[in-house]
Length: 147
Image: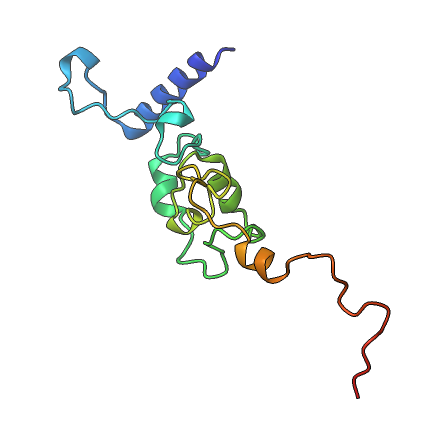
């Protein structure tokens, strides 16, 4: 079967579960239609990734929720903090622009903002003048004796 047929069946099933018949699209106002599922490419979404959930019924949304805040779930973007199902660092690396502000630092370290202009730099003048090689050996054949 095609995915388009499956999507239509899911939408019809969701409409039947809601218990109301929807007006045809031409009879609705421009702001009344809310699609039950977004099918845009990930480049157009805010998080730059496909949604992982399908159609969830209203009953499941209301009555089958986790009973509170999970304090053991890591919500940081560290590289190795992926132990409860979240891969935040991997998701952040895929995005062209970071969503988390802590992921911005060091993101473009290999891409400088502007090219370096090295027209007026001083290169090693002090070391070249102070340690000039003038052909004299430091101690010659004698080694210093420090007491």
